[in-house]
Image (cartoon, rainbow, N blue to C red; front, side):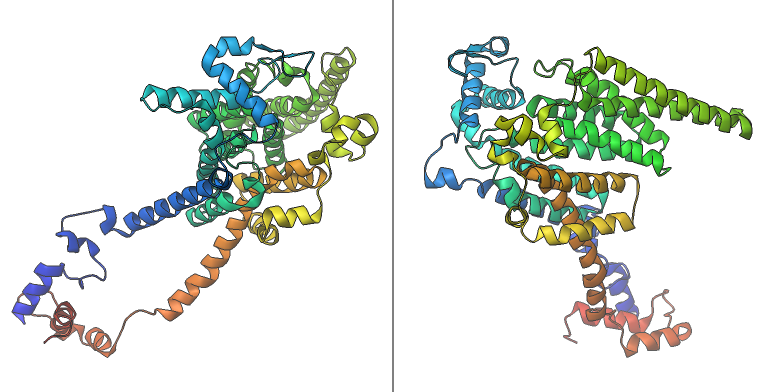
Amino acid sequence: MRELHRRCSAGTGGSPPGISRSSSAGGGGGKGGLSQPAGWRCLLSFTILFLACVCGFISRLFAVIRFESLIHEFDPWFNYRSTHHLTTSGFYEFLNWFDERAWYPLGRIVGGTVYPGLMVTAGLIHYILNLVHLSVHIRDVCVFLAPVFSALTAIATFLLTRELWSQGAGLLSACFMAIVPGYISRSVAGSFDNEAVAIFALQFTYFLWVKSIKTGSVFWTVGCCLSYFYMVSAWGGYVFIINLIPLHVFVLLLMRRFSNRVYIAYSTFYIIGLILSMQIPFVGFQPIRTSEHMAAAGVFVLVQLYSFLQFLRDRLTLQDKQTLFSVCVCVAALLLFVCVVYLSGIGWIAPWSGRFYSLWDTGYAKIHIPIIASVSEHQPTTWVSFFFDLHILVCTFPAGLWFCIRNISAERVFVVLYGISAVYFAGVMVRLMLTLTPVVCVLSAVCFSSVFERYLSDELKQDDPPAEDAADDFDRRNSGSLYDKAGNCESITCVKRVWVQTSGVW
């Protein structure tokens, strides 16, 4: 028995080999890495995410494999010409470039009429590849830019979903984002358009925003501002961000979930993001002079007023607090309304654009701006388009939305608002299915993950109960009389462990 005890203590450290102490298989001294369950989980998560990125990249190469490496359609071809001019003449020459072939015979000042983020991204990648002596033509960089960024979008969606729910849901959302048709249609190889990089910037900005309000860190908020700046430089859809984030903060105020973390995040985001967005020539002073950006300014003022009242709360009596709160809210609302009306009347604040009006009134563009209504992607979305672009996710998306509402928190309020607003705008204009697709992938992943965790884990527990037999029960009942004199190891348990170690050869 003492020999058995020595073999149990020395060989396994008191535990069956291969069952509970997997680190002993590597020499008994390794802690962490693949010898621990966390190491295997990290390896599995990395493998799934890597395969999702590879699948997303490969699934967009059909046009190149079937035909050749070429640029598709009209806007991508103009973007390619602009990128080629950027790489050959330099950035400042690109900003002042007058293209006499565009809008012929009028011509076009390219630098002040485009979002340069797409061209600068492709030019920077081309410069880095040539810097490391990989000679690649700028056309090939433009052709493969969208598939590469589709992989990055899958990673950004994983990060966002992980912050909102869990790592398992994040992996599911990355897999969905890699193959969902609503995003593939805008990111195939050769589709060198603004949406190729904008959806990645959109998802990454939302991830950093959620991270900012969860931590209250200025570091994450500054990162969110930089990502927002990239989004502004790449696509006009940045207006969706600058209205959704203030809406999120306003709803948190109404729900009484506003905190110092949210105050730090939004105040930093608005100020730095406003300054950075005005550096894009095509945007200019629009963030302070157009109606689309006034909601963000109004929420910023409201947040400052609310924080000031919170500061005074502990320094005033109850009657004074109620009076001060009522007076300040009424005065602030009145002043804000008067300022907006006055500035709009003198022409300082531009009215809503026709495209923005068409989002609220589907018949506005057909009556007042026929050229907008004539574009096919500006038409209302049919039900068939939802199923073709989203497939089964259109059915699981409402369930994921319900799971987030049921387990609500400050960051999940954001994804709920994102989902509801994206559904409405996607129904108004078929082009905006592109903004709906990411949140559908996120919420569908939440749905699948919640169902799997709730039901599959229970089945695993039922199908794989703890391995207990009659000998274990006998050991527990007679634990007081089964100790060896040489140490504190139960003899019968040691016999069982040696039996397992020798694979039944006694």
